[in-house]
Length: 290
Ligand SMILES: [Zn+2]
Ligand SMILES: [Zn+2]
Ligand SMILES: [Zn+2]
Image 1 (tube, protein in one colour):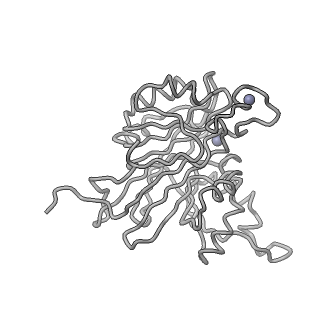
Image 2 (image 1 turned 90 degrees about the vertical axis):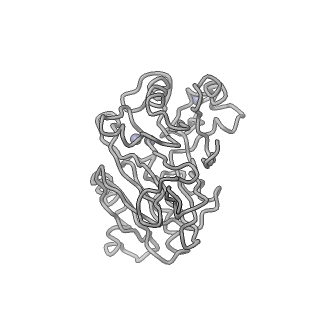
Image 3 (image 1 turned 180 degrees about the vertical axis):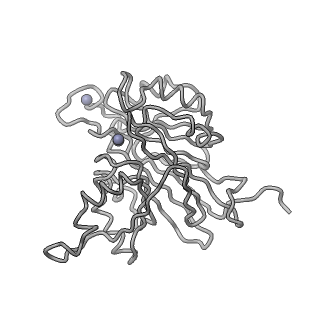
């Protein structure tokens, strides 16, 4: 009998759908060198990610982390046919304003979609998407998304189709937001000792500080996806140097930076990063091997 337990899921891929900050890159009306660059890696849509895998029964599964205003483009680019759940990090527009479009998955799957959000984000979604959550008040009965929201508190875990998603808190300026650690489970429902593909992975976007309780959540990772806004200080995001310092301390097998502005030229900074660190780009797919 094998000494180490294996995951029940396979073909795990983590997709960086959008790697830009809230304005996207190019920025509207900007003629700077990055906004006019012909390197496709300097074109960054608004933030978002997905994890796809095959579950124990052989079914393809897909979960989103956030659903921003460029979600429709992301979905078409990657030919998504289903969404099994959406984990929200926080209530900012660049992470939430694509939710209306998920009604297409309801139609294709003929089932509701589970949405995970903290109390603040849940309140925001219910207010902004009133036509979805208070559908009975709509003047005409139109085609809206079918969602059920599960309230998430930091420290809570959710096991879905062979993966465990654990929410933890990071600080986006003064606002506590959620980050997620994703691990694969074994046949007994425990975290598998041998993790497949890019797992264990933590997705930490939109933060300016890693609180003490978050450090154990980003320990022992194969992959860390981490905020890195720009070179200059910012009240709610990590600078290049701050992000590198966190990556050096976390010591993931591989750290990939996201949520960048037009201050960052991909080819320039990529060449200067320490080992095991890379800049993300739209469409980047993280598997087990770099
Ligand atoms: Zn953001
Ligand atoms: Zn620019
Ligand atoms: Zn934000």
